[in-house]
Structures are given as structure tokens and as C-alpha cells.
Length: 481
Image (cartoon, rainbow, N blue to C red; front, side):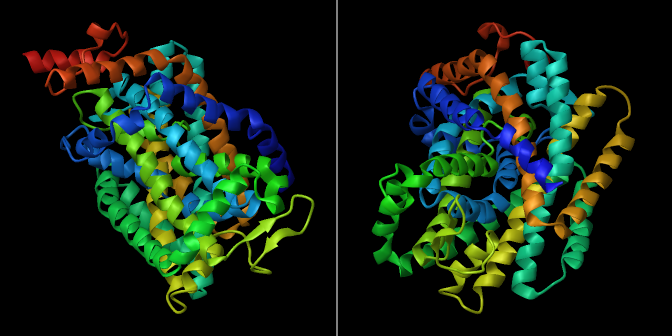
């Protein structure tokens, strides 16, 4: 099984996908004149504007739901894996894909708002919807929806539950079977409550967990502040093959940095748009900007916190592709959350392992909530009409079973299946958003023009010549009546 998974990953995660992600993000950023720098102020301001409704969630709830999907195992175990396989330079390439990926995040999230629908009393949207409505390619939309249900419902949950179980076992010696049972019970209560309950839970948990984790990282960095310039220099030198001992793995640094960066921040993967579509906003650009900001929160803050903790304390190994290790500071320690646990333990010996395990639990738990919501959105798309309660409940049971199984299987297999899920979605979605770039660019231009005129931007697809934005035609008609 592991051999088959590795072969598939070698095909899906070839250099072609790595460079497609980087080049697409760069192209979008250039075309939108690096809006991710120009509109930082708007991103923060829009984050706290608006409120939820009976049909949709607030901008902040959609942001929290999106961040809950982004901030997960990738921020702790994923960063450790990137450093172990690609060296310190991988952290730079995680930053690069985050900065450029903000462009992809804006495009996909704005498109999700443009082509969203109202279904069963809730807003739904995402790649399947904008592929069908924007490109007129139903078969392509169905392919993405099926790939997403498989990835989010079956492949990816195991990565999160496996890391939770490993972290809890390392810290407290609790059996993975016990952890799996508790996870299934807690998550079942939330997901059977529907999207509104998911949004409310994410709104409370996400800020709490992210702030607490970053504060501990800052304490560790401040205590080791004299080493910080050396660590930053090592990251940059390793990223460009200027560190002699690591020059031979420059390709691994780029590949693992981008791979784990996308796994963590999900820019371009097609997951963020699902949450973005659920937001109650007056203009697609508003949520596009908010979702672009969520990429920063994930990688530039949380992933950087993990990376600096690991590097500044020296709690890492670097694998030699030809066998053995290029750097072996921790003999016998498995790649994964243990790197971060050991880093925190350098300052908090009796607290570090438990803290990381608890942080990992909250990070991965909220990610599992987001996975369920994304899978449900795509099941709703595939069903299209009629009562979908039976299939939705079947999805819930299947996802909970996947979580239980993932917690007790090997980490290698869990991550391998997760990478297949991420890669398939990324290929399908990135090609779609490249083809649909014009409506997304037009939303940003329209937003900027209205702001420059002192208006609170309101979206009119007719004015922009965007077709099949049926929701907005009805929405605007109701506003004028």
C-alpha cells in the first residue's frame, strides 16, 4: 500500500506542480499589482466588518473557518517534515509560496463569492460551482467535487488525527485508540450541528489557539535572541544553495517548502473558497481580501513560529537523500511533532511536550471541522436537487470512521494519502482559476474604483459583464425592492 501511495505522489507532486503553484501565484500577484502589500490595511479592516445571517456566516467566521482548515498539522508536523527533508531553506520557500499564494487565495475566494448559490437555506460555493458557472464545464466541476469529497472525507482527515494521536501519546502515553474515540465523539457533536455550529466553534477556538502558540514561540525566540541572526542567515543561505553543507539539497528545499507550504496554507488548493462562499458580504473582493490575509496568518505567523522554534533550539535532523543524515542533532527521534515538542522542552522541560500536544489537538481538531464542511459542500453540489440528508449523514459517518482509522495507522501512510488528496485538488483548481482569472481581476478593480469614490463597494455582475452570477442578480433585485 505504502509503495503504491509513494508512486502516485511521485507523479502528482512532480516538479511541474511545484513550479505551477509558484508561477501562478507570481502571475496573479503581478497582474493585481501586489495587492497583498497594497491592501494590508483593508484586509484587517474588512476582517471585522459585517455580521452573520440566517443563510451565511460573518466575514470573521468565514475567515476563522478558513484558518481552522489552514492552521493544522501542517503548522507543527508539516514544518518539521519540511526542515527534515529540505533543510532550513525549506522555511524560506514556505514563506515564498505564502506571499505569492495570497494572489491565488484572492482569485479563488473572489470567484467563490461571484458564483455562489443559495441552497437549503445556506450559501454554498467553491471550485465546483465556479468551474460549472464560469467555465461551463460540468464534467470538470464534477471531477473536482468527487476529488474533494475523497480527499477531505477520506484521505486528509487521517493526517490530522494521526498527528493528534502521536502528540498525545508522546506527551501523556495515551493509547491512540483512546484518542481516536474521544476525537470521534467531540467532532461528531459539532458536525452533526451543521455549518453554523462549525462557524461558531471556529470563531472561538481559532484565535485562542493561534495566539497562545505564537506567544510561547516568541518566548523561546526571545530567550535565544542572540542566535536569531544566525538562524535567519542559515534559512536564506540554505534556500539558495549558499550553505556548502546543504547545497546538494536545494531542489529538496524548494520542493518540500512549496509542498508543505501548500499543505499548510492551502492557497490555490481549492479549500479556502468553500468557506469564503459562505460569508455574508456586499462585494466578492471583500472576502477575497480577507481570505488572502488568512494565508499570512497561517504561514508567516504560525509556520514561522514553529520553524524558528525548531531551528533556534537546534532540535532537528536533516535527511541525506543518499542515506543517513546531513545533520543529526536528535538521534532516533522520528520526523514530526516530536521536533516541536523537543524545541519547547528546551525552555519548558516539564511543560513543552504537553503544550505542543494540546496545541496540536486544537489545531488539527479545527482543521477536521473545516474538512467536513468542505466535503459537505461538494456532496451538496453533486446531489444538486432533492433531500440530501441521508448522504450528508453518510458522509459524516465515513469521515468519523476515517478519523478513527487515521489515528491508529502509520504516520507515513497517513501523510502519503494526505499528499495525494492535496495534489489532486491543487492540479484541478489551479488550472481552473488560471482560466477564470479575468472575473476575479475585475472584482478587485471594481472594488478599488468604488473605494476611491468613497463608497462601500457593492457588486453588480451586469456592470462588469460577468455572466451566470445568478445569486447576485437576485440579491441586488431584493435590495432595490
